[in-house]
Amino acid sequence: MKASTDTGPSRVPWNKGRLTGQKPPLKLKEIWAIRVRLQLSSQVRDLAMFNLAIDSKLRACDLTKLRVRDICHGEHVASRATIMQQKTQRPVQFEVTEQTRDSVARWQRG
Image 1 (tube, helix red, strand yellow):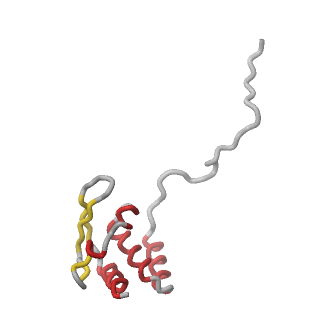
Image 2 (tube, rainbow, N blue to C red; image 1 turned 30 degrees about the vertical axis):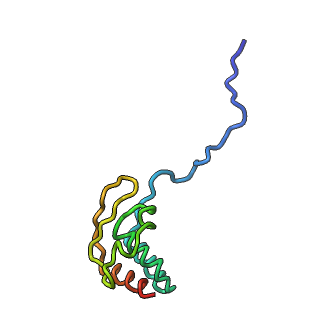
Image 3 (tube, rainbow, N blue to C red; image 1 turned 60 degrees about the vertical axis):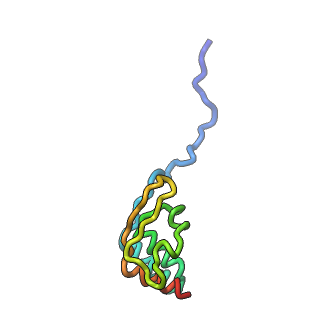
């Protein structure tokens, strides 16, 4: 008796020729291009959220749970903020840059 090694028609893997795994971080040039496009299209909220994401390096679930009171004291946007991460339950402190403070203040004003 002869054992058959033929497995039938060849199957193409779903990820053949695709990049898998962790994506490379945005380059500074790409970050500025996104900021400029958001400014030109007057998307104040999106610009503020994008700037906060870049400054804080928070996960998306933590970023979307941010409240205005987490980064603002009355009318003033704080230069530093501390957020409790959902996944690790550890506080993360980050600096809010001047550009981000301006965009958040513009968004807050409406």
